[in-house]
Every structure is written in structure tokens, then in C-alpha cells.
Image (spheres, rainbow, N blue to C red):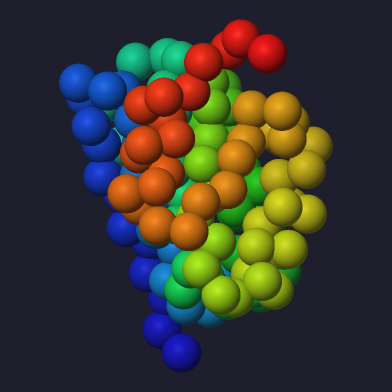
Length: 129
């Protein structure tokens, strides 16, 4: 199974979109990290992040460490809020949550079923209780 990391940026909304597809191996790490770093350079701090995990399959140990490193890069840039699109593959979501548990708090993370739902959640998100 092939793997791919897709990234898009919305400079107006200061939003990063990440889509993880397939099973990541160590050979996918460097190209994926380069894509992520390039996208982060296009955004300001206090960015929002939508991560689509609907086609993500838990990766190899080397790729797993890179996911944690990618999360730390996003946190260092100033991630404000995050939405994770879950789809039907819960094993990928469980690994992703485990790898990023010490990086992001769940208070500023929510879950959606689609990109449209994720955007709507971020557009209406307030920090009020």
C-alpha cells in the first residue's frame, strides 16, 4: 500500500489542511516533512489545522516518530485549534492520537466526519464556554 501526505494552505483563514493516505514507511518521512515545512512557512502563527485521517493506516515505527515530529513543528508554529476528520478507519485515528498525546491537548481538538464539517466547526468555533 502506497502512502501520501497532501498539504494545502488557506492564507486568508490561516489554516493548514493535511491529508494522510495509506501506510507510511520510513522512506516517506523526508518528502512528507519537506511538504509540511514548506506549508508552515506560508502561514502565520495561531493557525488552525484540519487533519484528514479517513484513509490513514497506522505506519511503521520510523514514520510514527516523524508524525510526532510533524506535530511538534505545527505546535511550535503556534497551532491554535485542530479538527481531525476521522472517516471509518479507527486504528489510524487511535495511533495518531497516541503519537500526539503529549503534543496537543484535547481541549483544542475536535472531530469531524468531512472536510465541510471541519471547516464549519472552525468557522463557528468560539473560545467561550
